[in-house]
Structure formats: C-alpha cells, structure tokens
Image 1 (cartoon, rainbow, N blue to C red):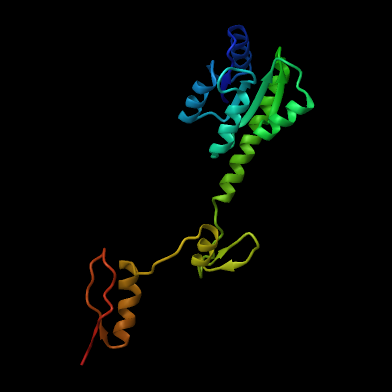
Image 2 (cartoon, rainbow, N blue to C red):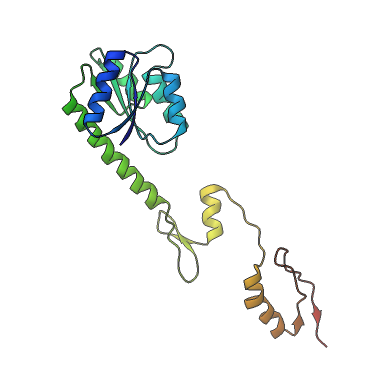
Amino acid sequence: MKILALEDQAIAAMRLTAVLNALGHEVELVRDGATAWSQFEAGGHRVIVSDWRMPGIDGLDLCRMIRQRGGDYVYFILISSHRITKENRQLALDAGVDDFLVKPIDPEELGMRLHVAGRIIGLSAQVKQLESFIPICSYCKKIRDDHKYWQDIESYFNKQQGAKFSHGVCPDCHDRVLVPQLKALGIDEPLASDNSPVALTATRVK
C-alpha cells in the first residue's frame, strides 16, 4: 500500500520508514503536519501512520482535517511515545483515529494493523462500487430504491438529490416515435434542429 508517514524526530522517522519498507509498503515520509496535509491533498494515500505530538498541526489535527474533507476512506494509525490513557484514547477516537501504537514500534504489530487497514479499505471500495449501481427495470425504466419500492426515474433522483427535470424529445425519439404519431393523426410536424426542442406547432393536412 501507499502510506503517508508523519514523524518529526529524525531517528524515529528512519526507523518507521525502515519498518514500513520491510513490510513491503511504499512510504512517503514527511516531518510536519502542514506538509503531510499538502501531500495528502495531492492524492493517492489511503493509509496514514502519524506521530501524535508535534508542533503546529499534530496527529489529531491532521486526522480531523482528513475526516472533514471526506472522500474515499483513509485508515489512520496514531503513534504515541506515551502510554495511551482512557481519556486520550477517547479524544483520538472522537477525532476519527482508527488505531493506536506506542513507541517503540513493534514491526509485527504494525504489520497486523496494516493488514487490517488493507482489508477495510478493500471493503469500503466494494461498498462504494455497489452503491454506484442503480437497479433499473429493463422495460419500464423504473428504479428500485433501498426499500425495494419501484418508482419512476424522476421521483427517484428528486428524492435522492433534490434534482428536478425538464422535458424534451431527443432527435432519435422524435423520428422514431413522435413523427409517426403525428402522421397517424394527419399532422405534418415541422422539422426541428437536433439541438433545439421539437416545435409543436403543426399544420393539419387537408
């Protein structure tokens, strides 16, 4: 996985990078929270391993910023040089932290946490893909919602996104459907350009 690692202490940064590389991951190391945020915004990171205590933007601040940003789920592992107390754990959870590790880092334990991170990211991608599919009837084109209720496409999108629709006739349907219907009624329908609404003023054939 591509991992963004945040550690401001030189020796600890070298050790963290070495451990992550040994576990087979691609690591981008940064030394401060502002740079970490800039690199994260550039895209491509789904896992972040960050030290907690740093000047400026610390680990919790960075996690809060990522959660507020939204988008694809990012697995956030927080590292602390001190024992994580019940109060600190709750503070981190409220910020959106997924997991914790205490220095010095145990490579096997970090590997296990990253294995879990990979599974969760994979599952979140599957859920997102499933949510992108909209069940639609092949005949009447009604859409099935989460409650298995079939409704027309306009009602569905209006309910989901507040979208409203304007109606017209595309050139294909104009030639295939509208013109034959008008001819059956004895009406000559004037030609309309492909990019303009179909003119509905017609002259009746004598």
